[in-house]
Image 1 (cartoon, rainbow, N blue to C red):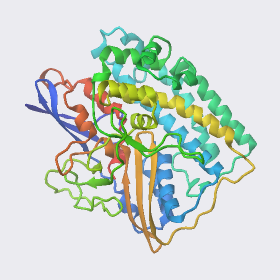
Image 2 (tube, rainbow, N blue to C red):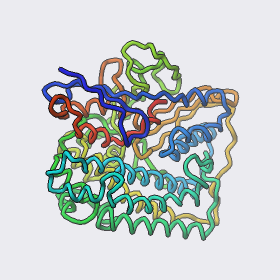
Image 3 (cartoon, rainbow, N blue to C red):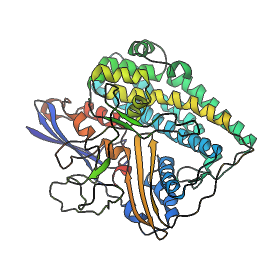
Image 4 (cartoon, one colour):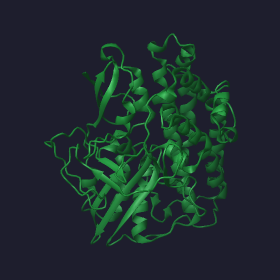
Length: 477
C-alpha cells in the first residue's frame, strides 16, 4: 500500500488536502483535511447579538446570503418576530439568485473544465467540451457570466449590494420595492430564462422541471445545450458508478413562504425511504480542536494543534450518530423529485452523476419559483417587521445554501453573544472521522476510485471532490 497526498486543489473556495492510501491502483482509505483555521465563532462571542448580521455573512463571499439568512433565522427564533409576506418573498428571491449563481459557477467554471483535459483527448466528445469549457478559452463562460451578472442585479434591487448585505433582517428585508423595482425583477428573470433555455438546457424550464425518469433524462442527452453535453460525457464515463456514497440524505428545507417551503425539510435514505431526523452533534476526535460538548448549542471551538490523531480544522457533524450527505441531491430527494429519487434508487447510493443532475435541474425549478415570487410581491404592503435586539435566549437558524444544510446555533446572555456555532454544508460532506472511526461522506465516496499507474493523480478523484462543490472557507469554523 502507498500513500498519495492531493492538494491544494484549484477551483476550490479555501484550502483542501486529501491523504489517500492506495492499494492496487485504487483508493483504499481517504482522509479529507481542511487546512485553514478561521475563528468566526470566537470572533462573534462577546459582541451584541445583532452583530451576527454583520459578521456572519463575511464567513463566505459566495454564500453570503445563506449565512445572513441563517443568522437572521436564529435571531428570529429568539425574538419571535414574524416577517410579512413580502419580506419572506424578497428573501427567497435574493437567496434564489445567490444559489442559482453558485450552481452556474460550479457547473461552468469548477466542474466541466476537468473534462477538457488532454487525458480525455481520445473521447468522441472531447473536442466539443474543449470548445465550450476549456479554462480561459472555452466559449461557455462568455455566455454564462453576463447572464449570471444580470441575475445578481436582483441583489442590488432587494439587498442593496452583494455580498455581505445588511438588508436581510429577522423581520424581513429592509428595502421596500416599488412597482418599477418589481418590473425590473421580472425583466431580470425573463433575461435569465432566455439564457438558461438557449444555452444551458436547450429546452424550456418547464420541460426540464418535468423530467421524471432516467429514460427521459437520457433522451434529453441527444439534444442541444450544455447540460446535454454533460450528460453525454457522464454516460460515456459512467459517472453514475463514480463517487458512490450510501448515507442518509438531509435537507433543512428551502425557500419558506406562508404556504410552506418550496423544498421541504427531512431525511431520506438513497432508496427514497424516509429516515428519522435525529439529533445533530459535532465531534472533534480527529479535528484540531479541544474537547467540547457534542451539542452545537453548548459547544465551543478552541484550536488544539497538538491533538493526537487530528488532521482537519473541520469538526465531524453527525445526524443521529451517523454521517449524512447534504446538497442539491439531498434537497431534491427529500422534496420527492422523481428523477433524482430514481437515479439514487438505481445505484442504491448517491454518485457524481446524480449530484450534478440535481444541481442543474434545481436551476430550472428555482427559476420557475422565483418568477412566481416576484409576481406575488405586493408593493403596497410592508417588507419588514422591526425586531428588538434580544437580551437573552437561544435560537437555531437553519437554511439551505447551494451546497446544502447550513445551521447557526446562537446563545445570547445579557444582550451579548455567549455562544455561536456554525455547521456548514461542506462541514457535513467533508467531515473527518468521528470518535468511532467512521469516515465522512467524501471520505467514503473516494474509496474504490482509480488513481492510475504508480499512484498518478487521476482526474477521477477531482470529479468526485468537485461533485460535492466544496466551500472550505465555510467548513473550517
